[in-house]
Image 1: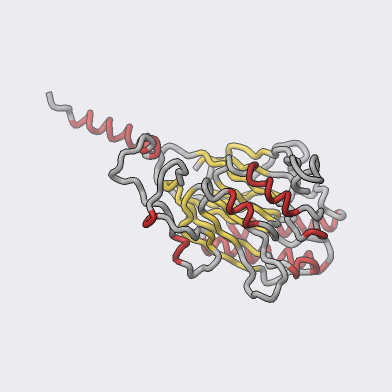
Image 2: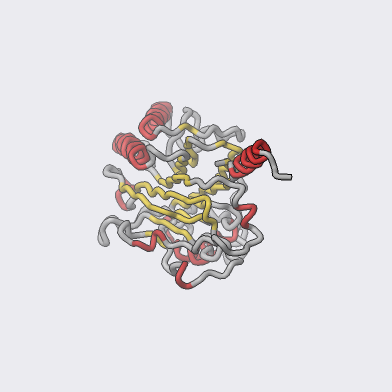
Length: 329
């Protein structure tokens, strides 16, 4: 007996429903404190060598203050997170340091957008701070257990040059090939997500406040212009500001008001919403996320790992907490 048209429709609906499953992503934000020796703890190299073991379980990794030894982290994670974008210096001579921003992804990075802050003040003049945004293809997840063909994977996945065609490097899709994971992958609707990483102006002087306000406008407009058609957008970073007046990082009430005002500008210009933090004492944390078009599962603050080797064994790997955002897309 031939199946009826209604049976065909039922199967089509079921298949369509299956293809629209939301994928859960784990996004780690971490200010790694990898400043040159005297500016941190004179132990940046050893800390950088241990950091990768605490990153590999997350899908997208956003690092701040990776000013030194970032290559140790990138190389250590190349087998699991081969897609990498950074924000280098605009000029080889000045500022002294780059942005310290790194994005690592399990999923293919299709494109990269960069902006350097036009206004910086005091100590931040020495670093090329700004924002780096990546468009990630959630239908193309790197599988380290699968052999990759020479013709289908570039050995230069670090995306430093906006004109570098290697930013499109990826393993070929497995269309037409047998793979035990194919059925599972097809349960997800093909989708892209725009993810931005930034580290904004620190400090509470008048000049630093003005720079933070200018950066909020610049970054917000940058995100709005580049992601106005994107269905899902996330911004993470050490923003040095937040949505409420209470924070251990603020000098006084006036400083708090100015930072909250600048944060409001960033939200308004970018079109993103604050990701509320329910963890006790973390509502005013300056390491945070904004987003739209995603379902927030939760925000977690894992304990900062400690050194396991060397003369500083037992010390923390960073002076900032890690933040993990879990979303469904």
